[in-house]
Length: 333
Image (tube, rainbow, N blue to C red; front, side):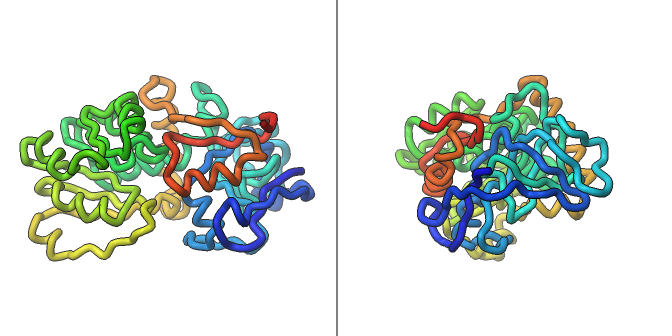
């Protein structure tokens, strides 16, 4: 089978290599799956660079989420999963999702929503789970509150926008450029701010009558976080989702004390071990929202397996909107 593998750490385009390797064999509690669609995430680039919190042994295959078909079961309890099932899963590294076949942990797979195609389903798992846990479990967002979303036209940001709208919030999206502004409006933002043209701090204060945003969803970090503290509302909550800017800030806690806001960290992956029942319940809620049309992953590109390295590099550079999804069965260009 064909699979992208990283043999040394570095930039994705430089270190990812498309190899011919044997099909993996499922161990106890694992599933062999055929990958129908694998969503490209920023952590894929961090894995390639050796900068992610998980460092799989070399060589490894990146790709952290997928929609796949179950082919075979390893020994042990596979739950209700059976061959032929269409599922969402995070693969078992070092065998990632940018491959024709890979492995998944039977205990963590979820039924793929019938209302979404393979590419949309592949993009629903991590980004929307992260958004739901961030907004509902961590920030306890309420109808009528103002939600500020950074990188609102990206894959992670657009998921938060849709979930914010579904929760009854007023959503302000911050983007970089007019094309991304149009995308953010289409996703449901009530107010869109192009940070390249407008000071988003002043714009948020104007849009909220000086109050500021009740909840701020920040997958960017760096200056985006620093400036967010200037427009967060009294008793507001800032959710730290990631650091796509590459800058990890050290917040002055005295400022949080003086302004009376809360800084919330969110590492969604921990819930898979700390509270798997909550992850399952979240998936059921997301499936319902998808069936109602309240959420729908923004898939901007569908590319063949041969273009996966380029796709990871472009996502890492922040030059994309929505999601790029790799489809191994799609014919190469």
